[in-house]
Each structure stands twice: as structure tokens, then as C-alpha cells.
Image (cartoon, rainbow, N blue to C red; front, side, top):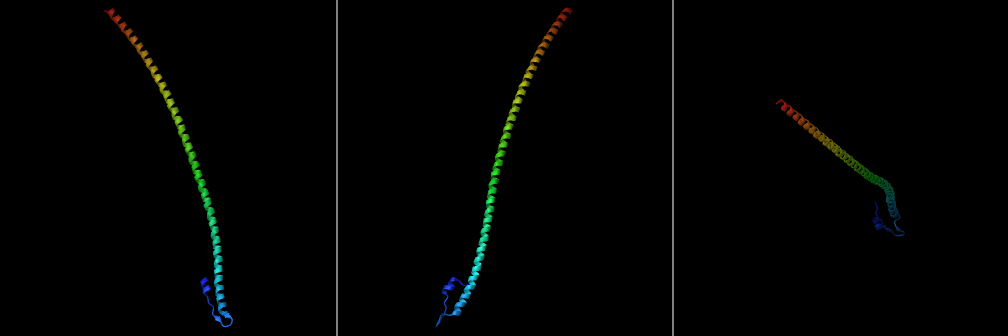
Length: 151
């Protein structure tokens, strides 16, 4: 392949009358034409390849933008899901606290009721015990009176 330096350094032999040798110049121009044609085709192919690569780059940029958008949407959705889950968990905890407090209150009321029942039973027992003592005392008195009569 002829380089620009080859063209610059090319020397044509001079003929006596008409200057450069027409045949040498024609041969050199033919060589230049072949190389120039080859370079021209190669340059066109490279331009076409560059154009295709630029289209591919644009395509991949579009895909990248879509992926980034999708990723951002997924992150937003994940944050929303976490927020909703957190709110639901907080609601469940609050409901559990309310339920537990209600059960504690109910149990405290039941304990108070059972203590009252126990106090009532103790009072009844004390009344029964007092009646029994009174009965036993009267029976004992009766037995003493009977013993006095028998003696």
C-alpha cells in the first residue's frame, strides 16, 4: 500500500524534452488509484460499521435506561412494601397490646369477683361456725341439766 510519504518522496525521472516520463507518471497514478480506491472502500465500510455500532450503543443505552427505570421502580416498590409491612406489624402489635390489656383487666375483675366470693364464703362459714358453737353450747347446757337431774 502506498503511504502519503511514498507519494511525497516519489521522484520521476525527467526526459530531455517533455519533463517527466509519461509512462512512469501513469504507472504511479494507476498505483495511487488502486490504493485510493481500496482506502475509499475501506473508509466507507468503517463509516458504515461506526454507524451500526453507534446504533447498537443507542440501543444498549435505551436498554440501560429501561433497566435503571425498572430498578428504581423496584426499589420504590420494595420501600413501599416495607413501609406497609411495618405499618401492619405496628398495627398488629398495637392490637395485641389492646387485647392483652383487655385480658389483664378481665382477669383482674375476675380475681376481684373471686375474692369477693371467697370473702362471702368466709363470712358464711363464720356465721355457720357461730351457729354451730351456739348449738353445741346449748346442747352442752342441755346435757348438764340432764346430768344434774339424774344425780
